[in-house]
Length: 499
Image 1 (tube, rainbow, N blue to C red):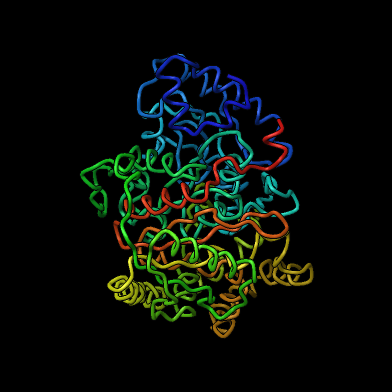
Image 2: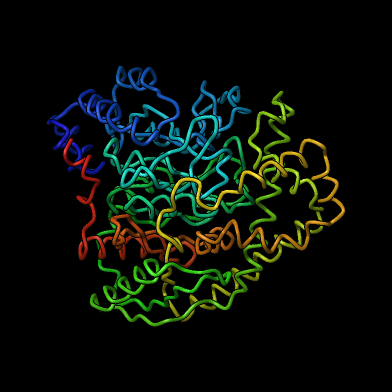
């Protein structure tokens, strides 16, 4: 098999060819490594190579549904025994995992050949991937733009043809945002369907979920069959359906009633291309026989954004505290992480709990919407993939924040409540480009980004579907229907297809 053949296959097809002995796992790994030599200087998608570990895998018999397929894991929440899980941070370079996480063990048992870890922003905190430790990741469609985050490295590796799919996770849009930026399919599963263990009960109070970014819907279905499940001691677990996702996925979803909205839930601007993406998706859905009308859940988007950010602040503070207890210095973290940790430390337990309790209000309101509509359609992003640095604090702002942080004034001001009136502005500024994805995280429902639109400048811009709790099957069925009606698998950057 040569690269032109390799890049035309999804993971399911490659595994089938390995099983039929038409190609070997060694040959597939060689193709992935060779393409990475071309792609890495352009994208910086991989932050740690694991070729030694991959070669060791190949010395043993490979079994499982996806045996022999080259694969990448993300360098956060996906522990690989004996290697650091550094989360894009200098502070965590010595954070060596004692055992495989549930998802890594499941991927290995499925026969996937893991040969690297993908790049991300520090602590997975952003919708862009710009780690100061590992360098920023570039979008394969245009290197001047972000591939999104936090699973930006995973998306860049898939979109550049290195692997057909890669592991990702999603605490506020981190599967769906990079999928939308890179012309890929990304599904965030329901809360509790996939274990975060054994090292953690749940990340971000259950807002974060494991999954993959892929080029085909059936790859995501196959991966979901592999990783769905729990570990002893789970805080809770969502039952998987009796039939495999890969088997149910090809079926017709039936006539669906879909409500759509392109209005930002926090009142910020939405780019005309994002609106056009939703309008085109709605027209496609109508053409497929679905009932589509403009509608959205009755949820206070600003309150949801504030609830998300308070949890976000608190989680950063906890991660920084854990790293410092293990010997990391505070200056080992990037300025933004230090600032967010300071804000998190200033939030009282009562305030945090108040915001956590609001999650129930959002979930009940979304459930009322879902009593009338099968799914909600929105843009995944409010703006096409942004240019590197777009929206970052200015040099003056960064200098001021750095001074306040070094002198301790930032913490003092936060504890005195002097920043309370600025939380709304922080919500608007930080989420203006990605205001649509957090709803699914706080309510726990599954959601997916489907690559149905490219801008006039040739950049991908996916649309999002938000489903009922536990309704991955119908989301996958709709995605498969859309994939058949408007195929995207062969749509890759020119430099990839010409390799």
